[in-house]
Image (cartoon, rainbow, N blue to C red; front, side, top):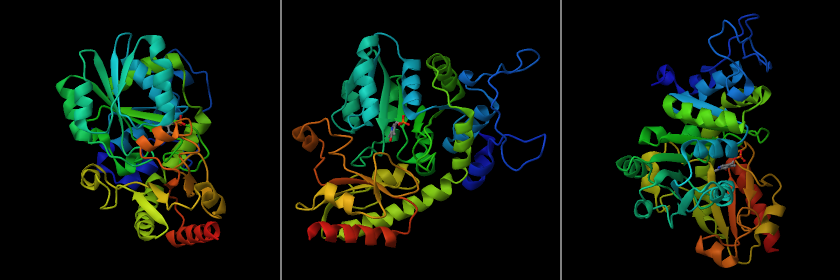
Length: 385
Ligand SMILES: *Cc1c(COP(=O)(O)O)cnc(C)c1O
């Protein structure tokens, strides 16, 4: 366990993994931009693609502390983290079980790359444990989950998944991006490898691309061996920005999570809106499970506009909330899954997955909910006119 376990969350965010400025005693981490380090009389041979420059190495300590793991690695994107982590544990002839509803980029990675390397995969039909169980084969090496999932905020039972996997000596991986380390620590529920697109909450300002993996020292060592070959390391300037972002991670995500709860409760009462999907609502089918495994319910939610209110017209009528592709910045944004993440599916396939044309995914920011509510109300009024 980490020494930093004793520290409070904000203290961890600010102080764990600082690079000490021994020369000038400045208050913040200096950036070491060197790509060339001494090889003689040193304990570590440092190089950016070895993922061990001073800034890279120290930031990993902060991320490990946030996820309560022994170690971590940082990457140039969430997909670099996901692909390096999966390939680190897979070889020709292995089999992977993947939750049906996962991030589109991960889905694309699996269906377009795995066949080439002779790696088998199966997608579950739901996020239920029986579904994962029925797909296990002798060559199954990884169970891969994402919870809460995109865009309907489904919840997968992490403890049940890890118990099932341990019984069969299978490795478990989770994409923990939507929850962030503030709202969910999967390692405490027995999940082996925790992955983040740090482009989202960890970065938090919609201005850097990065990824992170947290796990035991042994697992991180194995991922590292593959990662140095794929070379998805993060530049030290971006490492520095990510460290700066993480100092306010808890402040940001806590406020965003509180705002999301307020907005979900408001939207549920709004007569122009049908279903609201948010794990913090008692109406969410897995509310109890979410409560058991999440520290907070997160800041992502989805809602359906009533028939007759066009989703694109609605989004284009918003003045404060921005319709954008990505998520998790401190500004509120929306996306229309039918137009973006699920545009390549047929209408029938979309409906099978519960994605209606009026569905809006809402990434709730730090703005005051009263301002977000006025924006939504004026937009609905404009569209209905
Ligand atoms: C964005 C995202 C990713 C991919 O991250 P990149 O930084 O874009 O490579 C993976 N998983 C989830 C849940 C995401 O939202």
